[in-house]
Structure formats: C-alpha cells, structure tokens
Image 1 (spheres, rainbow, N blue to C red):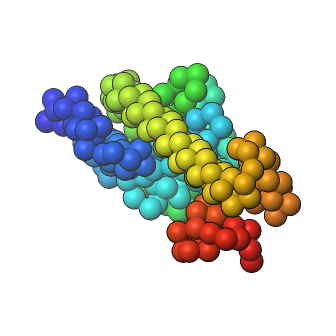
Image 2: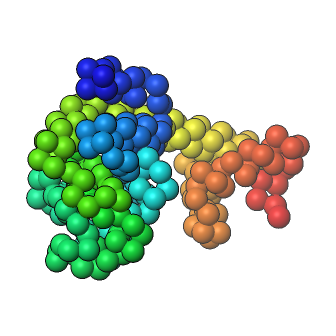
Length: 241
C-alpha cells in the first residue's frame, strides 16, 4: 500500500513543510515506515544533508536514529560517511561481526543497533544526502530490502533536490531583505547626521564609518542605534552615551 502511494506521500512532504528541517524529519519518518514494511521488522531512519559552506543537517525518525547518525561525526567513520563518499549503498549485516569502522560499530552495537544500511539519497555538486536505516535485528536487510530502500532513495531524490533548492532560494530572499533593511537604516541614519551636522552625504557617511570602526560595531547596528535614539527624541546628539 505504501509503495503504491509513495510518489503522492513524497509530494505531500514537500508541499506540507515550509522549513527544510521539518521536511527532512518527515522524510526520515517516511523512510522508517517504508523500511519497516519491507523488512517486517522495526526500522529507524535518519537523513544526513551536507551542503557547501553550510552546517550538516541531521534529521531522524526518532532520537535514537539521530544519535546513531551523529556517532559517525564523533568517531569520523561509519557507513553513512562511506555511502556519501562512494555514492553506493553500504550494508552492515551485523555490527558485532563486521570488521569495518570498529569504533562506530562497537558504539552502535552497544546501543542495540545490530544491522545498518546507508543509501545515497542525493549526490549533486552542491549538496549530498544519505539515508541511514538501522534495526535491532542482525541481518535485517536482505537483498530485496536493500533494493527497495535504494529505489526509495531514487524517488525521494527528486523531491529532496526541490526542497534544497527552495530552501536556498528562501535563504537568498532573506539575505536580500536583510541587505535592503540594512541599506535603508544606513541611509536614514546618514540623513539624520547630515541634518544635525549640516554636512554632505559623503561626510555624514564617513563620520558613520569612522564611529563604526572606532566602536568595532557593524555599520547597520550603529545606524539602527541612531534611528532608535532619533525616534526617542534624542536627535540632538546621535553618538551620545
């Protein structure tokens, strides 16, 4: 039933979540539901998103899924990191028997996670993402489950790519809006100084810049301070204590 409605469910995730973090959290929940149905065993799922010049974002279907994924960062190894580098599915049939990534496997096994499957979700130039599925049962992911989770990743990648692009566009809009607000505040503060000091615009801006450097305060912050004082009636001394 879930397979039949998978495309619709993925589309709903994109439409119903404005924030990227919420989308990723819901995607990890869908991944856990899907893998549980495929394996017939309880499965947790996490999503790891890495973008250029931005912090890594982790989302999980449960707190344990998040802990298991973040363990890789603390020991600098693990199947999720390997899947991201190789662009392939990485299977750990039994964390107590697999010799790879010993520190990670030992920590995962101590927490009761016996089998792990990491699948590349996104492998673009500016963004990479990985699904990581885990189960308390050893050998929970047979060939059929691995193929099914890989197919889920392929279908989810299209929606994931759109979610990342939308978030980038929203971030750009926020930056532009902030820049416009900053420029407006600076222009207004410059106008106040021109009126107070009876100077030109360039002289007022130079004065504003000098005080900004002297106080080691951003130009925007200083301009907003002047505007607050002006609105409060202290227009006579813009830089008074």
